[in-house]
Image 1 (tube, one colour):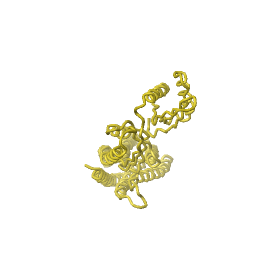
Image 2 (cartoon, one colour):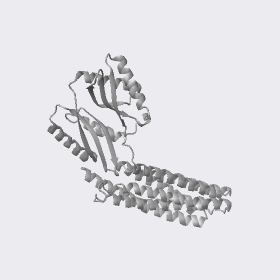
Image 3 (tube, rainbow, N blue to C red):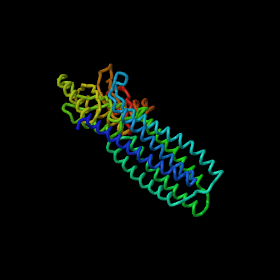
Image 4 (cartoon, one colour):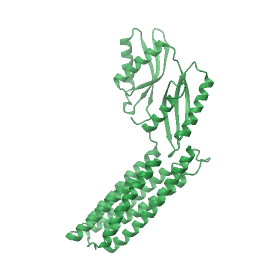
Length: 379
């Protein structure tokens, strides 16, 4: 299955999951709302409104997947796949607003309590809701993992949370019915605060890719392993990935090849790599060709020495684009260091430690010219 077929299948499954969510949550919301009003229970009513918001979020999710299908145009040359992220953000805002309103309703019930009219109908509705929400959570999780959808995985967590909330409402209703202790307002407040918290967490999760997340380690390893397995490739570095939505990623990487290789052959191989990354991994990859010296034993010896010095300090530190240039009375070593984000600010210290170690071990004098690159991945 090629990339376009995978993308179509992904959108079809996403829209199907959204439709199932709309129908299921509307049915649950209607049942709970009727029961909540008849039982005069603010906690059941709050749970009903939460299901209503879940139905609304499923509608937004469905719209998000539909908009994400739109092809690229002049105004949006990278496509519309980020619509899915925007849909998740809208859902988060809706959840937060409803939870905020329910907080005040529950506080009012706490100061003006009234007896909950618990019945067999209430029991049946709440128990059915718990079972349905548990099944819906499992369904969302299965589809979300299958198509790598953060929106559906968030919906799975939300449905799982609904199981906990509805269980709490059911237990509270039973306690109030049998003990006559009026705790409905307190449980309603707890449910409302949980809804607000879920909205905040969901907003954070959906805003993160919109702001620009770093490449995940799994994709990094997949792309680098493929590049390094290709003919005539000596090494690769500076992989940067820009996410324009699920299955819409644009990336660049530097690929090292022996300077003595035929440039036309190298160019053809690079074209093949770019096409394969799009076909197999759904990544629009642009490769920068780095010709390197591989037949200078002294340069290779010093390169390995610099690597050893760096890894004694921190095993995550790596180098690339290593060159030697003769100076007057000294040797210039020019290279790039890939710097993890938590080591930013230590550039001068790292440079000094390399030069000190080199000039202690070696009989010659060495100066270093280092370019520090930020590691665009999560370590």
